[in-house]
Image (tube, rainbow over all chains, first blue to last red):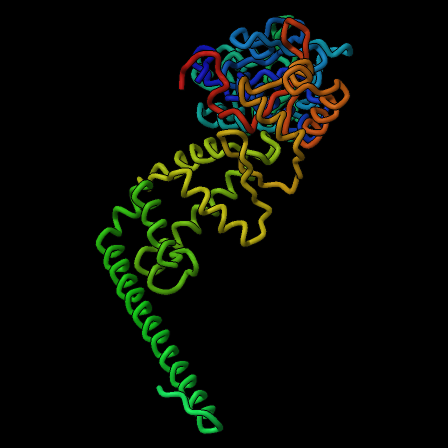
Length: 179
Length: 251
């Protein structure tokens, strides 16, 4: 079983035709499904939030079988994730993709658990503190992508669970929880 | 018997024929009775044998296969029905029924990948993995028997021979001779190119392309345009084993 570091790669990753976008509809659908799952799982395991289509993303090529995904294929798989709401394009030309291996509401729930677990129900924190503070170490929130974090926070603000306000530092916002 | 002329003589002859006929029937009946008795004895001996070796039959595929042959010779089919002595004693009916269900399951699960055609070898391997907990080994012979029972149910299952290997087809896709020849060719490396098909089978490029395109459409082949030599390769998942997709010889 081939691995990328500790990550166990599925068998299809070693089968050359899977690196060619299949022309037959049913076959292509199955192919896209497999790649979607792989990309999502890999990104979740490695905490990768952004994938650039022109980058050397490890899944885009397999040296062992000497195959690489064409540009068209890369875009097809990521577009499929976007359609499913598991990713978003960060630019109009579809060169950079934000991966939502947790959906925004799921991140929001994680946030609520985090707040409750640490007794922060009525406190104030900065966005940076949430991302890189001591409390979040060991949780999924640690090292989170800032864009996704802001979206999750806005989602919670909508539900009246917190309030976002401009902080003392010029570029960091503060959060007042009322969970 | 002395021949007598006239009507009397004729009547005697008729009577004599009747008697011979009766005797003949008696002899035939005697022979049949004898045979039936022998068969009954043999059957009961077979049942004793089965009882004594029940465990071996369940655990050992080679033994099981020979047991089936023995049964066949006496006209006994342990799989004929789910009731009666055989099913109750050996649970053999259940055994093959269960196997059949697992085979259908595996064929359905692998269909998106191989288009409904799977090598018998691969099927057996996947079955073995599934049944790891039961510690009852499965042979290709067992698979074939279970599949022949499936066919009776009209599931559209068919076993195709490709050279020395066998493929199990679980979809109604009809494969013609051209398709079969390509599949057999593909067994070598798991794929073929249009050139190779033309060359090795002496076909026109049109004939080769048509056949390959059909196989692609049916989901039995996948196309690979990534090789640095720029030639399209048609891969056939059904002739490869899933775990053989690695350049290295790891599991």
